[in-house]
Image (tube, rainbow over all chains, first blue to last red; front, side, top):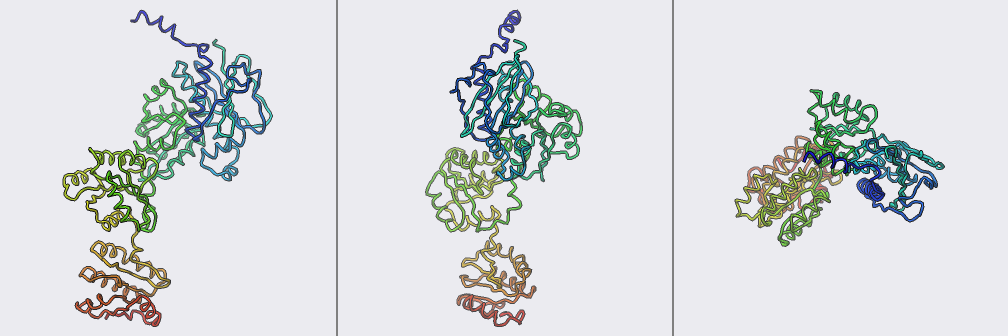
Length: 189
Length: 386
């Protein structure tokens, strides 16, 4: 038994390259679905119709399209696997999410201001990235979450450094779209 | 006792969700935005439970938990982790430091309540402040009985009440109903197959939402064994078949802590009216006696100076009713309330037969009584009784 162990360990120890594209897609999909269903009672569908948004495209050549006011939540994960996820929401969707999560009317939300919406989007991103990385942790890639941050604006693009791989996933949630931008560090590849 | 729950999370959103989840329960929520604030609040407030996030600035949840567990004054406070930081190995590592439960976000409010309810004896808020609910308010009653005829009999018998009676035939449907609604009272038939009634009773009691909901057992009068068992288990009341609906109604009202005073005491513009029903049983006399003094004082307090004691529906007199009436009149006199009586001929003639009541004078109708009161406004306590 004990003689075999080193061999088994070596062959079974996964590396980042062994995580297949379909696994990334399934993992992020499940995370988004789980969080939006539990917190907001909403069903999400992964949309892969546009060529540039197909999950395994080398996506930094096709930066995320931004139209109108956006609220972008970011949470990172650091450990045996490291990276960042950006969730892009249009401002109206972000408000809808905040009012639902906090049980506030539109007027109350208006009065409470952007900070409250930012916090709700930050928390939603935290939960999504948590659900994503917890699945990877259970597959042998333990890592920890970072504190969320929020970007707001209507005319910007996020460019990764070249040592990161980028994957973009687009989800349809009711009348709204959600873009998940997954950046993974490739240093240990 | 009001519980204190400390929520430690850097996200205000989560703290608001926690507050919202516990809003209908008898507890206070204290907030902290990181481990340092959390430790400070824990020593200052000694909460009954701590909900703890992991990823936070200044001091994270793992460090706070470790410090908490090494402080003799604080280590006994139960902690539930509420965090997006999951993963099997991670959860196990943190669980070893000493947590009572571990909730991985995203989470539903019901789940949070359910898990906290296993540690704290959470009481829904409507227990206390809402007990002034009256018999005219709507309420939801659940009847779990495999015989549709009995459900129908209860629905038929109580159809004059504002209560909505929902009948189901199986335990499964009963549990399903309780998960979607919060009934104000539940009636379970002990004739359900196997020990289903007792199993259902336990399940309802385990649910935080229905932990204190009154549960009646429905059983055939002669089945003494089952009645005894129901009593031991803690059913709020045993209803025997054949069902006596008026009795059931008054027990339901009592169990739901309803204010039934409006049945007997009303205000008609500036006149206070006390009315006894056709069948004034011993139970009714008891009920009226309970309300008598507070109701009359309340009227006097509101500036009322005239009263009518209306017995026109009453079928007959007995000692209990007479004693009640004497006390009512005495209370009116004590508070300088001018009063008069209304009664049918049966009551009027019965009164002639008793020493205490022989001088009572009755008006034939409420209108007559009111008219007589307005004719003599200045005469205080010129009652029909000597």
